[in-house]
Amino acid sequence: MSAKEPSLDVVIKKKSEVATNIVLFELCSADGGVLPPCELGSHIAVETPSGANRWYSVCEVSEDNRSYYIAVKREDEGRGGSISMVDHTEEGAVLRISEPECEFEFVDAPGYLMIAGGIGITPIYAMWKHLVKMNHPHFKLVYLSRSPADAPFLEELSQDKYKDHVLIHHSAEAGERYDFWDLLEKPTAQHIYCCGPKSLMTEIKDMTGHWPQSRLHFEDFKPVEAVRKDDKPFRVRVAGTDTVVEVSESETMLDALRKRGIKIHSSCESGTCGSCKVAVVEGLVDHRDLVLEESEMKTHMMACVSRAEGDEVTIDIQDAGVDL
Image (cartoon, rainbow, N blue to C red; front, side, top):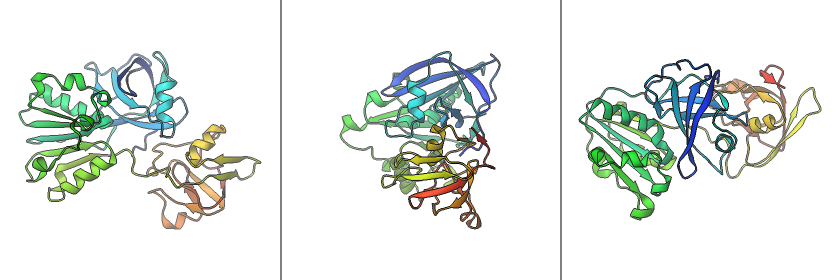
Protein backbone atom coordinates (compact mmCIF):
# COMPACT_ATOMS: atom_id res chain seq x y z
CA MET A 1 0.00 0.00 0.00
CA SER A 2 0.94 3.66 -0.20
CA ALA A 3 4.28 4.82 1.16
CA LYS A 4 3.34 8.49 0.95
CA GLU A 5 2.89 10.21 4.28
CA PRO A 6 0.13 12.76 4.93
CA SER A 7 1.51 16.21 4.04
CA LEU A 8 -1.46 18.21 2.72
CA ASP A 9 -3.82 20.12 5.01
CA VAL A 10 -7.50 19.85 4.09
CA VAL A 11 -10.70 21.10 5.68
CA ILE A 12 -13.80 18.98 6.19
CA LYS A 13 -16.27 21.01 4.15
CA LYS A 14 -19.14 18.57 4.60
CA LYS A 15 -19.75 15.43 6.62
CA SER A 16 -22.90 13.32 6.19
CA GLU A 17 -24.07 9.78 6.93
CA VAL A 18 -24.81 7.96 3.66
CA ALA A 19 -25.51 4.46 5.06
CA THR A 20 -25.49 2.70 8.41
CA ASN A 21 -22.18 3.62 10.09
CA ILE A 22 -20.82 5.03 6.81
CA VAL A 23 -19.98 8.73 6.61
CA LEU A 24 -19.16 10.71 3.47
CA PHE A 25 -16.53 13.44 3.84
CA GLU A 26 -15.96 16.30 1.43
CA LEU A 27 -12.35 17.46 1.85
CA CYS A 28 -11.13 20.79 0.46
CA SER A 29 -7.65 22.26 0.41
CA ALA A 30 -7.06 24.33 3.55
CA ASP A 31 -5.73 27.22 1.47
CA GLY A 32 -8.67 27.10 -0.94
CA GLY A 33 -6.50 26.01 -3.85
CA VAL A 34 -6.72 23.19 -6.34
CA LEU A 35 -5.91 19.72 -5.03
CA PRO A 36 -3.35 17.41 -6.71
CA PRO A 37 -4.57 15.39 -9.71
CA CYS A 38 -6.41 12.22 -8.78
CA GLU A 39 -6.73 9.20 -11.09
CA LEU A 40 -9.70 6.86 -11.03
CA GLY A 41 -9.14 4.16 -8.42
CA SER A 42 -6.83 6.32 -6.29
CA HIS A 43 -6.62 6.34 -2.51
CA ILE A 44 -5.28 8.82 0.02
CA ALA A 45 -3.73 8.36 3.44
CA VAL A 46 -5.51 10.32 6.16
CA GLU A 47 -3.99 11.15 9.53
CA THR A 48 -6.96 10.56 11.80
CA PRO A 49 -7.54 12.55 15.01
CA SER A 50 -6.14 9.57 16.95
CA GLY A 51 -2.83 9.97 15.12
CA ALA A 52 -3.20 6.78 13.08
CA ASN A 53 -2.83 6.77 9.31
CA ARG A 54 -5.69 5.14 7.42
CA TRP A 55 -6.34 4.71 3.69
CA TYR A 56 -9.52 5.63 1.92
CA SER A 57 -10.46 5.43 -1.74
CA VAL A 58 -11.37 8.70 -3.40
CA CYS A 59 -14.92 8.02 -4.56
CA GLU A 60 -15.36 11.35 -6.33
CA VAL A 61 -13.49 14.53 -7.23
CA SER A 62 -15.33 17.82 -7.77
CA GLU A 63 -15.31 19.21 -11.30
CA ASP A 64 -13.16 22.16 -10.25
CA ASN A 65 -10.68 19.74 -8.60
CA ARG A 66 -11.00 21.51 -5.25
CA SER A 67 -12.71 18.69 -3.33
CA TYR A 68 -12.04 15.01 -2.73
CA TYR A 69 -14.83 12.78 -1.41
CA ILE A 70 -14.14 9.75 0.77
CA ALA A 71 -16.54 7.40 2.56
CA VAL A 72 -15.53 6.00 5.94
CA LYS A 73 -17.13 2.97 7.54
CA ARG A 74 -17.09 3.03 11.33
CA GLU A 75 -15.59 -0.31 12.39
CA ASP A 76 -16.37 -1.21 16.00
CA GLU A 77 -13.98 -4.16 15.77
CA GLY A 78 -11.22 -2.19 14.05
CA ARG A 79 -8.10 -0.55 15.48
CA GLY A 80 -9.76 2.79 16.17
CA GLY A 81 -8.92 4.83 13.07
CA SER A 82 -12.41 4.78 11.60
CA ILE A 83 -14.01 5.47 14.99
CA SER A 84 -11.72 8.46 15.34
CA MET A 85 -12.73 9.75 11.90
CA VAL A 86 -16.47 9.32 12.44
CA ASP A 87 -16.78 10.27 16.12
CA HIS A 88 -14.06 12.86 16.61
CA THR A 89 -14.28 15.11 13.54
CA GLU A 90 -16.65 17.87 12.56
CA GLU A 91 -17.21 20.19 9.63
CA GLY A 92 -14.55 22.88 9.55
CA ALA A 93 -11.89 20.70 11.17
CA VAL A 94 -8.48 20.37 9.53
CA LEU A 95 -7.04 16.97 8.59
CA ARG A 96 -3.75 16.06 6.99
CA ILE A 97 -3.79 13.77 3.94
CA SER A 98 -1.30 12.41 1.44
CA GLU A 99 -1.32 13.07 -2.27
CA PRO A 100 -3.42 10.47 -4.13
CA GLU A 101 -1.81 7.22 -5.19
CA CYS A 102 -3.26 4.60 -7.50
CA GLU A 103 -2.72 0.86 -7.30
CA PHE A 104 -6.16 0.06 -8.73
CA GLU A 105 -5.52 1.48 -12.17
CA PHE A 106 -8.46 2.07 -14.48
CA VAL A 107 -7.51 1.06 -18.03
CA ASP A 108 -9.19 1.54 -21.39
CA ALA A 109 -11.14 -1.58 -22.30
CA PRO A 110 -13.97 -2.62 -24.61
CA GLY A 111 -16.11 -3.48 -21.60
CA TYR A 112 -16.18 -3.55 -17.82
CA LEU A 113 -17.64 -5.78 -15.12
CA MET A 114 -17.41 -4.01 -11.77
CA ILE A 115 -18.08 -5.94 -8.56
CA ALA A 116 -18.44 -4.07 -5.28
CA GLY A 117 -19.29 -5.33 -1.82
CA GLY A 118 -20.45 -2.86 0.83
CA ILE A 119 -17.89 -0.11 1.47
CA GLY A 120 -15.93 -1.58 -1.45
CA ILE A 121 -18.16 0.55 -3.66
CA THR A 122 -15.97 3.60 -3.00
CA PRO A 123 -13.30 3.20 -5.74
CA ILE A 124 -15.79 1.48 -8.04
CA TYR A 125 -18.24 4.38 -7.73
CA ALA A 126 -15.72 6.80 -9.23
CA MET A 127 -15.17 4.46 -12.19
CA TRP A 128 -18.90 3.92 -12.65
CA LYS A 129 -19.57 7.67 -12.70
CA HIS A 130 -16.82 8.14 -15.29
CA LEU A 131 -18.33 5.46 -17.56
CA VAL A 132 -21.79 7.01 -17.22
CA LYS A 133 -20.40 10.42 -18.10
CA MET A 134 -18.56 9.00 -21.12
CA ASN A 135 -21.71 7.14 -22.19
CA HIS A 136 -19.69 3.94 -22.50
CA PRO A 137 -21.83 1.22 -24.12
CA HIS A 138 -20.50 -1.85 -22.31
CA PHE A 139 -20.25 -1.79 -18.53
CA LYS A 140 -22.09 -3.38 -15.64
CA LEU A 141 -21.90 -2.91 -11.89
CA VAL A 142 -22.86 -5.72 -9.54
CA TYR A 143 -23.35 -4.10 -6.14
CA LEU A 144 -23.68 -6.36 -3.10
CA SER A 145 -24.65 -5.49 0.45
CA ARG A 146 -26.32 -7.12 3.40
CA SER A 147 -29.29 -4.74 3.27
CA PRO A 148 -30.27 -1.43 1.62
CA ALA A 149 -29.32 0.43 4.80
CA ASP A 150 -25.74 -0.80 4.43
CA ALA A 151 -25.29 0.43 0.86
CA PRO A 152 -23.91 3.96 0.25
CA PHE A 153 -24.91 5.73 -2.99
CA LEU A 154 -27.86 3.33 -3.30
CA GLU A 155 -30.43 6.00 -4.17
CA GLU A 156 -28.45 7.16 -7.19
CA LEU A 157 -27.45 3.69 -8.34
CA SER A 158 -31.06 2.46 -8.12
CA GLN A 159 -32.44 4.97 -10.62
CA ASP A 160 -34.35 3.45 -13.54
CA LYS A 161 -32.12 5.11 -16.13
CA TYR A 162 -29.21 2.99 -14.90
CA LYS A 163 -31.02 -0.36 -14.70
CA ASP A 164 -29.14 -1.76 -17.71
CA HIS A 165 -25.80 -0.98 -16.06
CA VAL A 166 -26.43 -1.77 -12.38
CA LEU A 167 -27.48 -4.98 -10.61
CA ILE A 168 -28.08 -4.63 -6.88
CA HIS A 169 -28.23 -7.64 -4.56
CA HIS A 170 -29.03 -7.47 -0.83
CA SER A 171 -28.23 -10.84 0.74
CA ALA A 172 -30.54 -10.35 3.76
CA GLU A 173 -33.51 -9.79 1.45
CA ALA A 174 -32.58 -12.40 -1.14
CA GLY A 175 -31.73 -14.99 1.48
CA GLU A 176 -28.60 -16.11 -0.33
CA ARG A 177 -25.33 -14.92 -1.83
CA TYR A 178 -25.24 -13.75 -5.41
CA ASP A 179 -24.11 -16.37 -7.93
CA PHE A 180 -21.49 -14.90 -10.29
CA TRP A 181 -20.93 -17.98 -12.43
CA ASP A 182 -23.10 -16.88 -15.35
CA LEU A 183 -21.04 -13.68 -15.59
CA LEU A 184 -17.66 -15.35 -15.18
CA GLU A 185 -17.98 -18.76 -16.81
CA LYS A 186 -16.73 -17.61 -20.22
CA PRO A 187 -13.81 -15.16 -20.41
CA THR A 188 -14.51 -12.08 -22.50
CA ALA A 189 -12.58 -8.99 -23.55
CA GLN A 190 -14.01 -6.98 -20.66
CA HIS A 191 -11.94 -6.06 -17.60
CA ILE A 192 -13.12 -7.01 -14.13
CA TYR A 193 -12.75 -4.61 -11.20
CA CYS A 194 -13.51 -5.93 -7.73
CA CYS A 195 -13.39 -4.36 -4.28
CA GLY A 196 -15.03 -5.53 -1.08
CA PRO A 197 -14.65 -7.96 1.81
CA LYS A 198 -11.87 -10.53 1.65
CA SER A 199 -14.42 -13.33 1.20
CA LEU A 200 -15.86 -11.65 -1.90
CA MET A 201 -12.49 -11.04 -3.51
CA THR A 202 -11.37 -14.59 -2.76
CA GLU A 203 -14.55 -15.89 -4.39
CA ILE A 204 -14.02 -13.81 -7.53
CA LYS A 205 -10.34 -14.78 -7.74
CA ASP A 206 -11.28 -18.46 -7.45
CA MET A 207 -13.93 -18.13 -10.17
CA THR A 208 -11.68 -16.26 -12.62
CA GLY A 209 -8.65 -18.53 -12.63
CA HIS A 210 -9.31 -19.24 -16.32
CA TRP A 211 -9.41 -15.53 -17.22
CA PRO A 212 -6.33 -13.67 -18.52
CA GLN A 213 -4.81 -12.18 -15.37
CA SER A 214 -4.22 -8.84 -17.10
CA ARG A 215 -7.99 -8.32 -17.18
CA LEU A 216 -8.47 -8.78 -13.43
CA HIS A 217 -8.11 -5.88 -10.98
CA PHE A 218 -8.54 -6.11 -7.21
CA GLU A 219 -8.31 -3.45 -4.52
CA ASP A 220 -7.31 -4.70 -1.08
CA PHE A 221 -6.37 -2.36 1.77
CA LYS A 222 -5.46 -5.16 4.17
CA PRO A 223 -2.53 -7.14 2.71
CA VAL A 224 -1.33 -7.98 6.23
CA GLU A 225 -3.50 -8.95 9.21
CA ALA A 226 -2.07 -6.71 11.94
CA VAL A 227 -4.23 -8.05 14.78
CA ARG A 228 -5.43 -11.63 14.99
CA LYS A 229 -8.00 -13.31 17.19
CA ASP A 230 -5.39 -15.46 18.95
CA ASP A 231 -2.99 -12.58 19.71
CA LYS A 232 -1.80 -12.13 23.28
CA PRO A 233 -0.75 -8.99 25.15
CA PHE A 234 2.93 -8.18 25.55
CA ARG A 235 5.24 -5.46 26.87
CA VAL A 236 7.54 -3.13 24.97
CA ARG A 237 10.57 -1.69 26.76
CA VAL A 238 12.19 1.37 25.20
CA ALA A 239 15.97 1.02 25.46
CA GLY A 240 17.78 3.79 27.33
CA THR A 241 14.63 4.86 29.21
CA ASP A 242 12.38 3.62 32.01
CA THR A 243 9.43 3.44 29.59
CA VAL A 244 7.47 0.19 29.46
CA VAL A 245 4.38 0.09 27.22
CA GLU A 246 1.67 -2.53 27.55
CA VAL A 247 0.29 -3.73 24.21
CA SER A 248 -3.14 -5.38 24.46
CA GLU A 249 -4.23 -8.35 22.40
CA SER A 250 -6.45 -6.10 20.28
CA GLU A 251 -4.01 -3.34 19.32
CA THR A 252 -0.74 -2.97 17.44
CA MET A 253 2.55 -2.00 19.00
CA LEU A 254 2.49 1.19 16.94
CA ASP A 255 -0.92 2.18 18.32
CA ALA A 256 0.09 1.38 21.91
CA LEU A 257 3.22 3.52 21.58
CA ARG A 258 1.11 6.36 20.17
CA LYS A 259 -1.14 6.29 23.21
CA ARG A 260 1.94 6.86 25.37
CA GLY A 261 2.93 9.86 23.27
CA ILE A 262 5.66 8.03 21.32
CA LYS A 263 4.86 8.69 17.67
CA ILE A 264 7.08 6.60 15.43
CA HIS A 265 6.99 7.76 11.83
CA SER A 266 4.71 5.53 9.79
CA SER A 267 2.88 5.41 6.49
CA CYS A 268 1.21 2.24 5.24
CA GLU A 269 0.60 0.64 8.67
CA SER A 270 0.12 -2.65 6.86
CA GLY A 271 3.67 -3.99 6.83
CA THR A 272 4.49 -3.03 3.27
CA CYS A 273 6.38 0.28 3.22
CA GLY A 274 9.11 0.08 5.88
CA SER A 275 8.53 3.51 7.46
CA CYS A 276 8.07 2.28 11.04
CA LYS A 277 11.13 0.01 11.29
CA VAL A 278 12.62 -0.07 14.79
CA ALA A 279 15.70 -1.79 16.15
CA VAL A 280 15.22 -4.82 18.40
CA VAL A 281 17.61 -4.97 21.35
CA GLU A 282 16.20 -7.99 23.13
CA GLY A 283 13.37 -10.49 22.66
CA LEU A 284 11.98 -12.66 19.89
CA VAL A 285 9.67 -11.19 17.24
CA ASP A 286 6.64 -12.55 15.41
CA HIS A 287 7.37 -10.94 12.04
CA ARG A 288 4.27 -10.16 9.93
CA ASP A 289 5.62 -7.61 7.50
CA LEU A 290 6.42 -7.93 3.80
CA VAL A 291 9.49 -5.70 3.89
CA LEU A 292 12.35 -6.97 6.04
CA GLU A 293 15.08 -9.10 4.52
CA GLU A 294 15.83 -12.31 6.38
CA SER A 295 19.14 -10.85 7.52
CA GLU A 296 17.30 -7.95 9.23
CA MET A 297 14.78 -10.00 11.17
CA LYS A 298 17.06 -10.62 14.16
CA THR A 299 17.77 -6.93 14.63
CA HIS A 300 14.65 -5.04 13.50
CA MET A 301 10.86 -5.21 13.40
CA MET A 302 7.94 -3.29 11.91
CA ALA A 303 5.97 -1.62 14.70
CA CYS A 304 2.74 -1.51 12.67
CA VAL A 305 2.13 -5.24 12.33
CA SER A 306 4.75 -7.34 14.13
CA ARG A 307 4.54 -8.42 17.77
CA ALA A 308 6.67 -9.94 20.50
CA GLU A 309 6.78 -13.70 20.25
CA GLY A 310 6.93 -13.92 24.03
CA ASP A 311 5.91 -11.63 26.85
CA GLU A 312 8.31 -8.78 26.10
CA VAL A 313 10.50 -7.11 23.52
CA THR A 314 12.99 -4.26 23.96
CA ILE A 315 13.35 -1.77 21.14
CA ASP A 316 15.68 1.12 20.35
CA ILE A 317 13.85 4.05 18.76
CA GLN A 318 16.72 6.52 18.47
CA ASP A 319 16.92 6.12 14.69
CA ALA A 320 13.23 5.48 14.04
CA GLY A 321 12.11 9.04 13.39
CA VAL A 322 10.22 9.59 16.62
CA ASP A 323 8.10 12.53 17.76
CA LEU A 324 7.91 12.69 21.56
